[in-house]
Length: 511
Image (cartoon, rainbow, N blue to C red):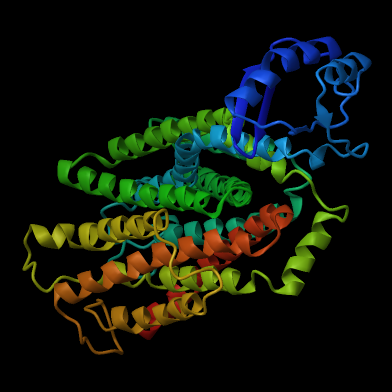
């Protein structure tokens, strides 16, 4: 406990009280510190002393001491400690102390953001490993068609192998959307620590199992079934985790959504860089996949430790406590009021549109662009891994991270939704690049430089605008509604991913 005093001329003494304070101890503190503080501040005669009606302050011994010292005491009404100006000073002191942990909390949210997407990015990076294990041993290397092969002449892929990417997309997007929506309704019923630490733990177990299975021989059908179950689990629990994190960050200042978005951006960059390293080293698919999954386990474990350390941060606790008072109405009523009032519609629809355009184009269209400068050289091998995946993720990360120092335009500016809408121009631009094979549209931007410039602008605008929307959305509502607003924003983010995945098929057919 602390005791302190201040006046218009400045602060007086501040002392730490280690024992339980009573009336006698309070009198000793006043006698040893009040008059010396008044002298140090050069207070003139006639100053008035104010304290509230705490029992220690109104004790007979305290009143007698003040009377003997001839202090003028400002009387206050009962049950009104907030009228004491010292309460404001205590609040400022608490904020100043908490600010010292600003960087630590920022780093924790960054690690949590990294932990939400890095595992799934590594899972997708290992797609070739999964399809390789789905090959039918009976027809491998043969053009003879059987019940388990595709009906394309000369194609010996099994049905499981040829349909894996489509099934993976479906089994990822549907649970992601459903459980993000579900989280926006259950986040008040299930404790936050259960949702975040629990989801991270389940995902950790799934990736440990995935790493172990790399070394276990298994038939194509059982392996396919188990992999699909793991995909559903990862995205179901990942959806609840992501929605809960954005809801948690919404209780803090707007800048604390940035480290989550930035961590997610680094996850993509890390996965793309790992893919290029594996390609350059010529590592076997199983060895590369095992490295991906073990790395994901380490990151998830680090995220769990970081989250467990978060409650000990006074900076975090201060904002958590200030957000603790909830209205009497239920969360569903709170959510419906937010949607009816339309306070976050613009930001929610904006983030949805950003990811619809991005996922609709990347990677379904961008991955099929062919270099016109490689001429069969090494650049032909690294063109898509570097120009498409690595460059996209690096610039996306840069855009997300920029919001830590710059948040233009503001949350109420009409420029922000206009900038979001203008991103639709990237769809025809990429369609008119050298996408192969193509049947309908001409190639207007054949040179590699055009494609690289488009990727830079496309990815940077995605990261910057999406991060702005996610930061501003919860700040357009009252503080007590911030967590609910954060979960709603996470739902619209997931909705954009799902809509983009559906549109990607349409865009590719148009080409």
